[in-house]
Image (cartoon, rainbow, N blue to C red; front, top):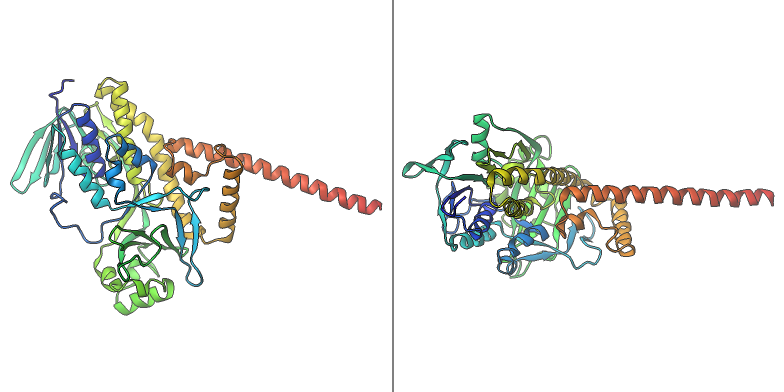
Length: 444
C-alpha cells in the first residue's frame, strides 16, 4: 500500500478521532466523516453527556500520541465509591488496596474536542462534518453520504467504522448479508440530572464516584471541572419505580424525597431535568465478522458496544485502536492480514468486558451496600497487601492495568479457586481441632 491510499474513518467520536491520529502518524491520508455538525461549535444535546471514567487503558492510548497531559489537566481523580444510603451516613469504599489509585472523571465532550483538535492538526487528515453514511459497497469501498448540500459520493482503499453502537457501517454490512449481529437491550434506561456547585464549591466530595444503590435501580454522580456533578439514573423502563411511572412534578418530588432524600436540597433543577432530559437505552452489541475482505472494518462500539457499568466503554475502544496499530506493525500494513488478526486478538477480550460490565451493574445496584459484600472487599484488600502482585482484585486488573480483559477473567477465576481451596482447608483444620478438643474432653 502506498502513502497515497486514503483511509476513510466513519465516525468522529472518541474512537474515530483517536484512530485518525494513529493512522496519520503511520503516514496515511485520512478522511474522517461525521454525521453531526462540528461539536466544537455546535450545541451539545441535552442530557447526553455521560461522563467518562478514564482509566489506564485509555491513558495508555493517549500517551502514545502525547495527549495524556492535556486531557488529564482537566481530569478529576476518583479514588473510590461513596455510597449514599436512604438513611444514615455516607460510606467510602476505596478502589485500590493502597487507596491512591484512581479512575478519572472526564467530560466526554471535552475529550472529543481535544481529540478532534489533535486529528485536524495532523497533516493528511481532513474532517467532513454533517456527512451521514447511507451507502457503502464493501467490495469497492465506494460510499454515499447525505449532507445539507445533497448526496455526496466518496471512495477509499479501506473503510473503518468507528461510528458507535448504532453504526451505519455495520448496518450497511448487515444489509449486504456479510455479517450477523445481535443487540441485547437491558430493561433499563438512563437519564441525566445535574447537581450544580454549592456556594461556589462542590456539593459532594469530588474525589469519589457517588452511588445511590437501591436494589433494582441506582443513581451515580461524577464530578465536573466546573464543580458541578453529572448524575445518571439507571432505572427500569417499565413497571413501578420506573421512568414510565413518574409523570407529574409532585410524583417526581415525592419519589426522590423517599428514595434519594439527600439529593433534593442539592438539585434545584431536579424536576425540570427529569421531565426534559431524554431516556437513553442500554444494551450490548455483538457482531461477526468485524471485517470484510480486508477492505471494511469495525472497531469500538461499532463492533462490540457494552453497558457502561465498568466505565470501560471508551477505554476498551481506545485499546482497540492501540491493538489495530500493533497489528498493522506486525503485518507490514497489509490490511487484508491486519484486520482479521485484530478481530482474532480483540473479540475474546471484548466479550469478556461485556460480561464483566453486566455483572458490575448487579454489584453496583444490589451488592455494594451489603455487609457481606463489604466484608469480602476487606478480605480481598487484606490478601492484596499480604500477597502483593500475586493476588490482585478484578477491579484493579481492569482499571489500573492493561492486562487483556479475557486474561483478567481467567486470573480472577484461578485466584478464587485457590481461595476456595484455602477456605475449605482452613475449615477442615478448624473442624479437626474442635473435634480433638471434644474428644479429649470426653476422655477426661
